[in-house]
Image (cartoon, rainbow, N blue to C red; front, top):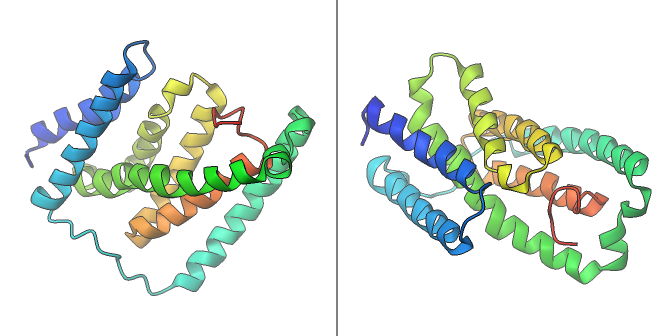
Length: 208
């Protein structure tokens, strides 16, 4: 399971074949089955093959993490607010102002049931399994961002692909620095929740 050939096949199936297939029209139950089986496989590999302990990795500089995240968030908030204001002014903060209960529910469900599994797969698993196969760290991070954007092909939306690629770069850099699934999940949840809050939900396929 640790040979280069095995990992290559594994990478192709998990990060290319299945995500691309999700953009095709076939039974949602089969897609769900792929997702559940894939998650079980990933947890098995992390526990039994990679000896991952699923414990919170100590990170000594929480202050630096929050400062860096705040700076990135402020830039993202400014650019996305400007974007929504220019392209669809009516959508600006529409959900939080008109459907606050739905807004809160979405943020909780998204943060706990969507973000963490994504980071477990695309950062924890991906870095554990494939980082040693690449001599170039920058190339590795770039590929991580590419496959993360591929996971969102089923939205069939070019804006989603662009944003998830950029997000993938940010999250990969954070994980590469902190080695913490918790910290990168916090960052991911903050940015994703903001996009929904600012009014980009309908553009990104979120429930409205």
